[in-house]
Amino acid sequence: MFPFHPGTVECPSGKTGMSLRHLSSTTVFIAVGLIGAGFATSVTTSSAATLDDGLVLHFERTGGPVRLPEDVLHELTDLTVTAQVGHVPGGRRTITCTLGGGVTIHYEDGVETGRKNGTATTPGAIDDTIATCAGRSADGSLQGEIRDFRLYRRVLAPGEVRELGKETASARPGTDLASLDLGDTSAVTEDLTLSTRVPGGSVISWESNRPSVLSATGVVTRPAPRSGSSTVTLTATASYAGHTATREFTVTVPEDVSDRQKVDDALRDVVLPDEIRGDITLPTRGSRDVTFTWQSSDPRVVSATGEVTRPPHGSRPRIARISVKAAKGYTSNTRYFTLTVLPLPEKAAMEGALFAYVTGEASQDVHFAVSGSDPSQKTELNRGRPVLTSEYGVRDPFIIRSEDGDSFSLVAMRQDGSHVEIWESTDLVTWSGQRHVPVSAGTPRFGTALPVSKTELERLRQGTQPLRANEKGVLVDYDLTSGSGPVVADVSGNRRAATIRGDITRSSAGLIFGGKRGYLDLPDDLMSGLDQLTVSAQVEVGGSWRTITCTLSNGVARLFDNIVEFSRLDGMVVKPDELGGLIVTPNSGARFQGKMRRLTVWNRVLTAEEIAALQR
Image (cartoon, one colour):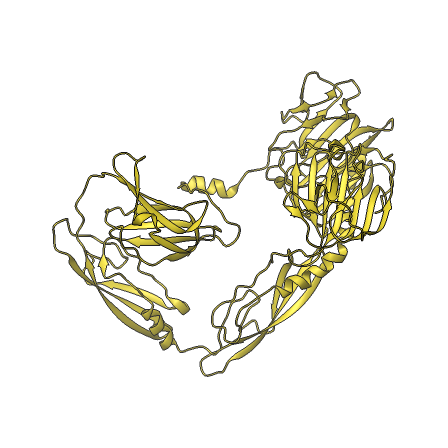
C-alpha cells in the first residue's frame, strides 16, 4: 500500500501546517550506478544536503486524502514523497518513495523494501490535467491519518530516509513483539518454533535463562523423571533499523516420562496397512529418539527394509509376518504385524480418462469428470458436486497411478504453497482421509523438479564462479577516448567489451553523454560470484576532470571524489554478485550531461593509496 497516487479527492478543510517552497536545483550530479538487485548511488559536488533542501511541499497533519497543486510536479526529473500513515497493520508507518534516473525505491520506516529499475515515467511527465493526491490509490482512498507529508524535488539519500523514518521505526520492535504468540506454555513437551523474523519486519533474537531445559532455538529437554517440572524464562529481543525492545515469556516444561513409556508410545504409533499392494515404508526411528529394528519371517514376500514381492495375477494372497524392536537406552520392546500381500492386478487397456480439477485458481472442493476416447467430451461425476473436500484451499490437483496399477494418489498443492495435500484410493471411488505434507517453511514455491547427476549436483551447489581478472584484480578497463562505433574495447586484456546505448557520442576527450537516455552497458555476468568490488570513473564536472570511485565490501559502500571520501553507507545487505548487470548511467540524480574518459572495475576493494594513484 502506497498512499500517493494521481486522483481527484479534494483537500479536507481540516489540514494544518502547510508550507510551500520551490527551491531551484543548482547541484551538478554525476552517477556511477550499480543497478540490478539493489545498489545505486549519486555523487554531488555540493556540500551535504539537509532535510530542508529541495523540499517543495510539507503538510504536518491531514485528516485524509489531500489534493496537491496541479503543477507541483512540473518539470521535475527527480522526486521523493514521504509521509507517516496511520491505521495500517502493525501500527503507524513512515512510507517513502523515491523516483529518479529510472529507479523507483520504496521504504518503510527508513528501510528499503522494494526497488524497480527501468521506470520510464518521470515526475514531470505526469499530465498537468491530472490532479495529484496524497492518500488515494487505484484501490480507493486511505482510511486513516497522514502526518508529516513531504514532497522533495530530489532523491533523498538512504541516510536521510532513515532519519525521516526514525520516529515510527523506533516503535516497530515493541509492536512486533506484541504480535508474538507461543501458544499454551503451561506444559510444553515438544520443541518450540521461535520466530526470528515477524511480518512487521523486526528481527527477533532469543535468550533462555535455562538453556539446558529450553534452548534459545526452542529445543526442549525435559527434566529427568521424578525430578519435577521446570520453569523457564524466554526473552525475545526485537530489532529494527537500529531500535530494540524486549519481551519475556514464561514456559513450564514438565518432567520427562520413563524410557519404558517412550518405547511403548513409539511402538503404539507405528501404523502399517493390512493389505499390501506395493513397497511399504518401515520407519527406523520413532518419537523421543526411540530406534526401530525390523525383522521379517519371509523376506521373499516382505523384506526387513519394506520391499514387497507380490504374487502373480490369479494367485492367492500371501501372508507375511514382520516384527519391530523398539529401543531406548537399556529398555526395549517388540511388536508383531501380520500383513496380507495381494496378487498383482490384471493388465488392462486404457479406454478413457479421469479428470480431477478445482474451479477458479484455488478451492476447497475437488471435482471429478470422465471422458471416453474423445477427451473433449467430459461427463461430470457426482452430479457436479465435489468428490473431495479439502480442509484448506488447494490448486493444481493431479492423480498418480502406482507402478503396479491398482493404487492411486491424488496430490494437490495447498493454496499458500506450504503443504502438499494427499488422498489415497484403491478403486478411484473410495478415498482415504486427507494427509498434510509440509514442503515449504518460508515463501511459497511453485515449479518443477529435475533429477540430476552427482557431477551436475556439485556444479549447481558450487554456483557461478567469479570471472577471471588480470594480475591487478581488474575485471574491465575502458579507455573512452579512442575507438569508433557502439562497441567499447576492454584494455584490461580480459576482452570484455561494453556497448554504448542512447544519446552518447564519441570524441577524443571521451564519451559525451547527451543528458537524456545515454548509458554504457557492461557484461551482464561481470559481478557474478563477487563479494567485493571497486568501480572508478573519470568524468568532467564544471570544466574540470574528477575521479569518482565507489567501493563495496562487507556491507559497507564508500564513495570518493578524487581522494576525498564524502559518503559512506553501512549495513548494506546486498553483495556485488546480487546486483545483476553493471550499467554506468544516471539513476537517483539528474541525467548526466558531460564527458567520461575512463572506467575501470576491480574484483577487490582498492586501498587508499591505490585510490589516490587514480588521480594521476
